[in-house]
Image (cartoon, rainbow, N blue to C red):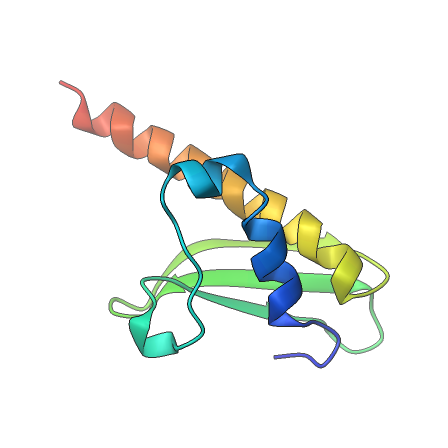
Length: 100
């Protein structure tokens, strides 16, 4: 959603996250093949990069947030870390609910 961010930078950073790999997650480029969609934007005249992760089948927001960085390349590791942390917390909550 912004020319200031290249998807490949985020893909590279996600693949460096230990939990992302441990969970068996992969990135795909075709939206119809994705279980989750990540949208990145940078509002005009700011250094804020916003991200939203949605489930396209149910149109549910799974995670969202904002990081501040000078450019997309500097924002990518921050976004990857924030995404994996939110996923980890969601998985922990789901595991806690599933246990009797």
